[in-house]
Image (cartoon, rainbow, N blue to C red):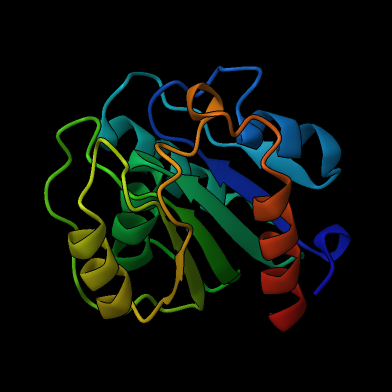
Length: 171
């Protein structure tokens, strides 16, 4: 699938307004993309905003891109909302920056690719690898690259964009 054929929903975790973050940069380049924004910095608000975004009528399939706590919002919404239009999820460094409760370990109802850093300060690689595998995701070990945000030097993150393109091609 090409990005132009899908509605791309970005689901950020903490610091969603960083103009140097790879999500912000990618969103500006993808014409069919929009960001899910929460009214407050908590998982309940983000989950509600994602549920509303998925409920918007449309004809295009949806591909989700989550980072940090946004990944957990995707996993939660996959079990509580209509995700029939969702074709896949690109999940980056799931973490509990907002003291998110442990995510469900049931398989997601759509394909997923889970990119993990070995030294993310907000999550254990081993624990998140286990969660990602339980979700049925394909795990990508990105090495010791920090939080995968602009402060860890991943503003544009071209490697991630290439990996996302390969993921889209398989959907």
